[in-house]
Image (cartoon, rainbow, N blue to C red):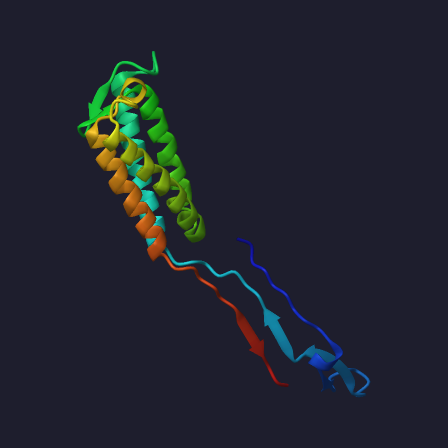
Amino acid sequence: MAWLRRRRYADDDYASARDTTAATDAPVVTRAPVMTEDAATIAEPFGIAQLMSMLAGIFFVVVGAVALARTGVHSLRSPTAEVFSMGMTPLLALIEIGVGVLFMIAAMGRMLARDLDVFLGSLMIAAGLIVLMQPDVLDSWLGMTQTNGIAYLVAGAASVLAAILTPRLMVSRRHVSAM
């Protein structure tokens, strides 16, 4: 984020200072601010949600890329391949690459990681529960197995938990100087 700076100048916030270094040796009165109020955005420290986003993003991009390399892109529904005991079709591989890229984008900022971790984690928990309860529903298009459901449930829960554990940062600063 850009550096934001706001200064407040009012007649009562100024102090007069005399400068006698002018060529005429006459005192020159200058006005300087007595109180400044700075509102600044400060670089945020790396949070747990960002770490989780980066790890999940790398995992899903790698798994999706390996599955896409094994299945090819001739048809989105077939053939199926197994990567880490998870069934994959080319469509699921593309979806996982997309989710992985979103997780990696989320790792760019602390608040972005919190927001996207909650959103994507909730979707992954829902997908994991659907696959665990009704594995036949997504089998024909995506080739998912019980291992997929467990992996999505764990990754989603870890993502939401990391977002909950990452605190919001509120920073304000006030500087008062006396002349």
